Image 1 (cartoon, rainbow, N blue to C red):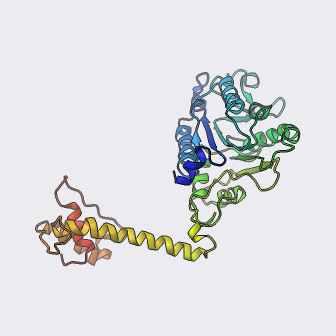
Image 2: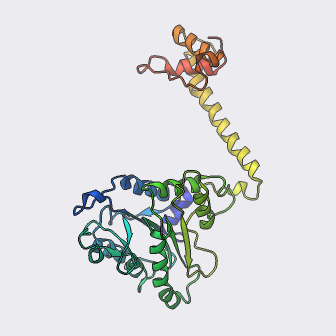
Length: 353
């Protein structure tokens, strides 16, 4: 986490909170189990806490029941510590379904009974009621990673519109942003949404060093344009209750004020130059010193001897990559202290093997 992210988390400016949950186990219907969603949730947590400056709230955890899900969200949003300028991101993953009787989108929680899904599942609109009814929350990013979640997002939007128009009338910088992992009649591949989201945030095509926040619409567009996205799954974005630009939910992990306003090609060149300098430092302070067989940088003599066979093998492979198998990597392995780093240092220093 960068220093700027840490300051925001500690109270200077808007605070950032993440609540991430996934329903991976269904005791009443083990065929619904989705253990892969454990990793999907972890990926979202890593992205938001590692790159976007959020503080993860751990009270909800995995596999909540219907009551636990709404009660924990309600308790957080109603907390006396909550402020109107808090940025709240909520990720919910699990089975989503559209009921046959009324067409409502519901979430299957860990206590959902397959024999009575209409009564024991959670209507997606209840998430809005839990988080927005008489609470100070004004900046909410809701990520629904379920099948048919586009319909759930639409129903949630309709339920929130009237409440938002009455409660947020004088709020500035407010907004409800809903990102659904699939359209109303589409299924969602488990684990795909976090992968696409992380790739979009990390990609230079989304933004270089300049913008302070990432545009959420640009991020969603990049997700939909990704070649990794299944053809049957399209990400949906809904913006509600905005008083201007959407809240800055997604900080730019590449933000560098020194490069603001600089051409993107120059930004790339500056980053490549920094990488080259790091490689040079690693070569001269570690690999080269080991190759010389000396621990004193003031001594420029070469003391290393031995390892002739492995050096000959590596040199032959470097000279004739086509005959050795073009594109095949080579791995130097051995026990601690056996001279692996020295061998690599000798190879990289252009000294004769």
